[in-house]
Length: 454
Image (cartoon, rainbow, N blue to C red; front, side, top):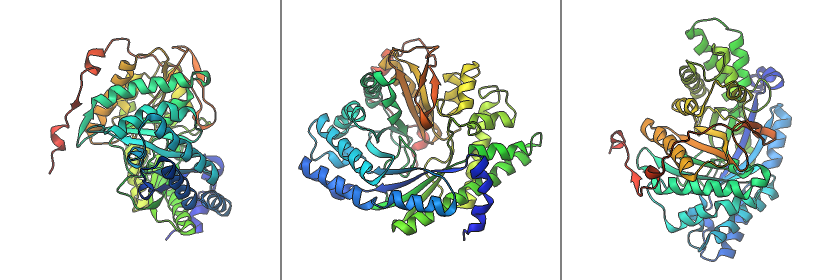
């Protein structure tokens, strides 16, 4: 049982070490909303979301006030819209009207973001999948809260290279449509390999078809807590280091478990998972890169970085699974560039490159995340970067992702300011050599041999 005494133990973490519950996310199935009439479909979706999530903002506020734990975001994830809209949508604009409805519903219930404007195309694209993907630049440009994701690959099915090629083109269109705002809409679009069904973190959240009608997923975050704990064992051996990370992760997860159980009880919605992810912010002391430096690196990106990150990720998960029986989602360490001041410092010092970040994604939770690249980067080059990340996830049987931001009108040496939790980022150089002939092949890359386990 979790009690208030455990929460009081974390008061110092909240007040001085940037511990927070990053999000309470309600996952909502929209399968019952399906209709062949587009107007009726949109009505059904709006009514469903606003009914299920009507008390989300109020309950989050009550829990935050009662326990003194900051709850930074209230979010909603829904069934991938390509599945929901297929019967009614005959054009990209038809799909975009669903994004409008999602945005309006999220605003009505006080949700910060809503995810699930998504398609799952790891083995092939239906007509509805392709229409939704082609509608993404329209949808993201005219909505405030809608986030989009596309699962392009999996260990079981391989990599859909036709979809990878298309997503390079789509990302540039999203960048162009928001070029007056430093291509900021690209932050709301992520591509995955092995996307989890129960991820509460945006922009990749969607409510998987294996989930119940509605579910509560909670994401907790505490890079600052882990760094402070490690400061107290500076110079100790690896056994002490690992035990310290595990114990800290355990305490952080217990806080999330309490919030999840309370939210579930008060909303009358089943509890799903706790996602224990070290998700950094631009705030000083809330950095995954700073944890790596505390472990013993001069900068993130120095030799030993991948080993240190692998150890950190593993110990965080070991501590988390002892604190809750339902740890899921992504769970581990995020390494976004723009949202982590330590990562930004490493890029500016020349300690970290895209290639080193790609190597780090082999052992972390996500992938090439929140990385600003020159706006004149070719679509095929972007697709090549995506394909590399998909291959890492496919072969290593893990979730990987790419959230790239080609900033139109800016190049290497420039900085782009996103604001708030999204921070700012230096434009990173991209390999200049062509992969056009590779990306322009059609079809898919088959699943690896170790995927065959039937």
